[in-house]
Image (cartoon, rainbow, N blue to C red; front, side, top):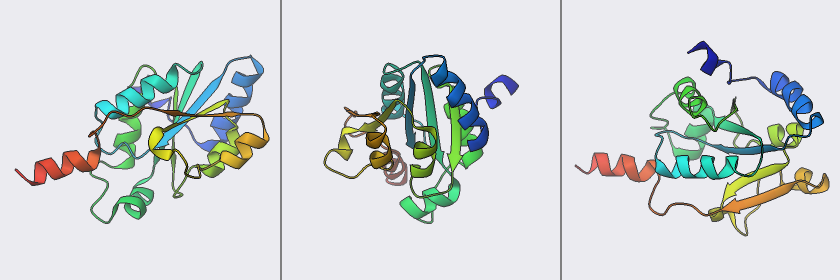
Length: 160
């Protein structure tokens, strides 16, 4: 378990690692989400993200951030559990938890080579977009699996 926990880093440590990784010629891919109840849509997105580079960094919204985005009854799972679950996935290299509404500061500090978002962001402003484009980085939108969301799972449970 300690090996898995070592994948969960703070921003300063992650910045140092990112510099070393990029200086070695490896490509860093970044994505983010709440990941409240892990489902097949999350697995699909994260595994597809990993295909776009060598190292996958996943930013997980903190409990307070999830409450701001999803409402007072969320998250179901606390931030430590959610970060640990994401860190357990073999295709995820590093995890960071963030308190803000978006991971813009992390993205602009790390400058990953590729930022992955779902196609539901098409035509919308993406956190970190300006600093990534200014530094020649790529934003890639990937297909999502329809009807897979934590909200749908919660509603299904509540309606039984």
